[in-house]
Length: 461
Image (cartoon, rainbow, N blue to C red; front, side, top):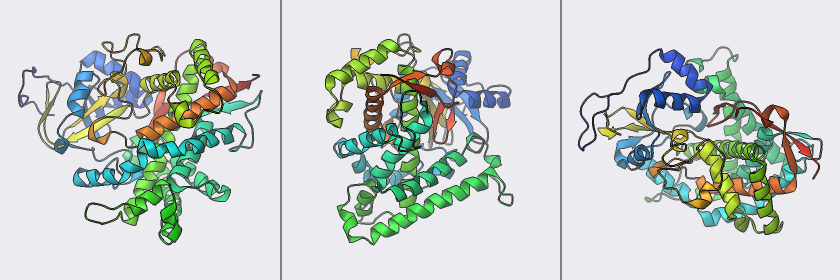
């Protein structure tokens, strides 16, 4: 990090101190990133410096003022940091990692697929996926009284079914099983050690975790490649309404189309990001609701008054349901940090940075800033009924020109699935989770989530 003066402005020069004993800091961050960042900010002030093993260091802020500076920084100064922990999963051509003109062009191709008017067509698909899970479509075990439910497994099953329908239009049972097995193996093979320690990404006669991951990625890619080839050769594919059909017909400004290898990485990104992040948010929403009986009762009353036959788009717009989902995302943003690497000089909250430096926003710190959020650690959805928050105060999907392109679909899906589950069954948190501290948050592939599978018991209505 540079020690030169900030380029201009009245802000005082901030001296950043690297943490001592970096290995211990890295272990603390890996064990619980949110609590580590809170401790680091209290010890070092804001902004503060954090080191990531094998990925370098970054200057972080957790304030609305810092978020405003980062999200409004000149586009030409910002690129994704590389190397990146998620690159093996999504690939360098992914919209998450692409840069400059390429990012702008690919985002223009993808954005129409996630326009609010277009995703409203997925409402019935989302509701059907939730109902299929309740009826035992994933495991053969219906959610009947006396059944114990693994919320993470159930949420992943629902969201995977939705994203496969939205991206590929898949609803035929055999193909659905094929993709489900391949995607699940792919996601499970990229655990925390491979995510956090690049040195483990080695080959050794097919025995390492890295080799199991690359084999799973190859199997998923074979399915995606065959789907692309089949759809390109099918004259009727242009009539389909799924995201793959849209991307096959999309063209850049010069008339060119996405090459198959790049299309595969964009589709793989959609499977990963559109599946795991929403599943994690759904688990946290169920957990928080069942720790707060008054909040759960108020949500059920709103859903009962709305009626079972409400159109999905109208359902997703119910005010208290919306507030519950937003409060869940405030306390548990699925991707808790936003990182940008600089291509030129910049100052973040008075800290002078130069080309090659990395800066970031801790979304969890931003979402608990005491100047914005009274009683920030309480689950209180009413706060979203009382006022609106700026994109520099509430940013569960990031911000600026790289804000998550699929945010609208994620929001829509979370609301419809949560409403379907809450209105259809009565659940009790299993004793391990009903009391005590909130579970630790750890990396799960592209997102973060509870370190243990949160379970519920289905009770009598």
